[in-house]
Length: 214
Image (cartoon, rainbow, N blue to C red):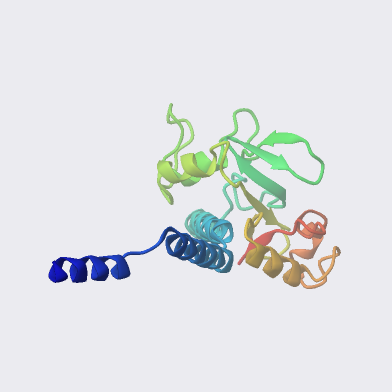
């Protein structure tokens, strides 16, 4: 009898009361909220997206540079003597959005008659073979960056001798938005490279700045 009472007493002392369980659950909840606040999962997701956009920008930039090295002219022209000036354009399907004016024009080369699309020229060409490609990128890459829900890439080239080609994207994460704003300095783009400053009206929109590579 004494043994039974002793065991019952130990069991009652070892068990948790409802209040103790609620306190533990409350503490765990507070810790979980604190951890989520510190990690900021939305920011981490957006950083991942920005990392992907940066990688795609580098790949597009490299593909166009390789095309230039191989052909001696950029894919939006048809020979080395053509005007290579390129407005601030956004890749979206076979079209390019000229952001400054808001109009939509096909991102095509300057051929008279039947032009070829730039993305076909740096990939595997078009379906009927009339516009051959140089296979600088896989078709899966051009398909990816032209999807409607993709954070579209933008290109800019001033056309002046010695100028760089730029590929830009609108950052989603706070960290990269801050980086873009610091690079612009102001809406006139005084912190941008000299050959990118003519596009400052599109790149350095206050509160909506773009990251541009290189």
